[in-house]
Image (cartoon, rainbow, N blue to C red; front, side, top):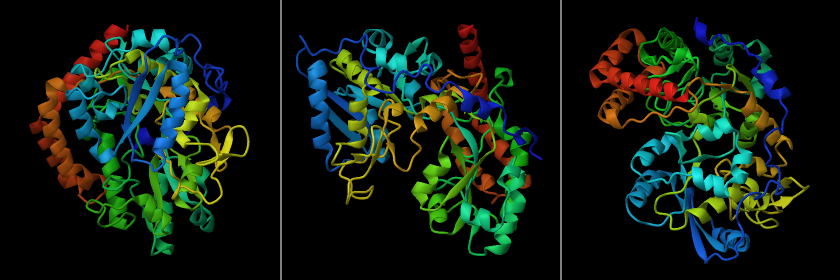
Length: 504
């Protein structure tokens, strides 16, 4: 049995449900506004604020940009230029822009896209003073620990977006098959409990794969089932989000070996795709097409509703872990002001509005009312007649990116109190003992590259059950040692010890 994963639901769910939903949020409307911020356009020279983020060009982007500029011109005598960059080109293009002198005033940043490296290279500006001058809406909207999660050496170089800032992990299943075979979802407490369920599906639905990976080119548990803080890159982790801040090699752990044994048994029983280690299937598309039953996923309140809407099939979810907040869950989406900005004060003024001005946030996120959406009540919206997600002229579909998602109108398909529920979820999550620690890979980047090459060679095969762990796990660990994994873990331990000491 995977003992450490035999986690019944703790009191976290109760804490989340009973939390004072709006305490400390202060962001439910324009009244949170720009209090304490100098956002008057009086006396300021005209300026164009360039905003770079990942996304594809939208047909009506110029219209939306013009409407945003009307608002910002009044507030700070500035216009807005939106610069979406395709995610496939993001890393290369932004590296070139930051290394050169191309003007960017606000930019999406992320702990997963080299945030600490950008700071080390001096490519991002320190924000503490700017937040003090112009960021009252931001500091009102974020909990102190959330803002602190992005700090390096006591300084914020990024501001986390307000969204789901914690995660629990579990499984999403097709409700039609759950009902058909009278599956008792309340009895599912661990991953092992899924074995007889997969057996039922396999025996009675020969054209349905019981379990698929959520994302293309990954394994079932990737981002879908985790009981450790990955401390950034997963090369040296913190088991159970604590472990006395002792970093361990996950690949040498007993729990990982037991997990691989379970996955191998599922693979041999036919519960996983035979080509799971090489195919690039999107598991969600297979579920949508009726060819698969379930996938593991990181989750948040409303995950089943969201999956139902996206897949066109009613889905049910079961959480298998409590909700946890880590540095990565908070800093996965952030905003920074690059050194290339010609007016950091104006950039911070705009960012502050995206955390405090409901009208501007929804304009940037959803477009123009009456054209890209229509309101059915003060805070609920739907598409205009003849418009949907496939033909809207403005639909980045990344509401979690554009500042404070708790300012967003909700769709008619969502719960009207979705953001109050999410706020409680974030505040009720158990905080990792390493929350706020950010690993700097600069001194071991050669070893990190070598270890990642070994991981690429072995891990997908092991984690899909395709490779026999009895034979291949020892070989995997030998090669990881040769590539320098111990040096990385020692460096990470050294940094986390220094971080803990400085934190007091």
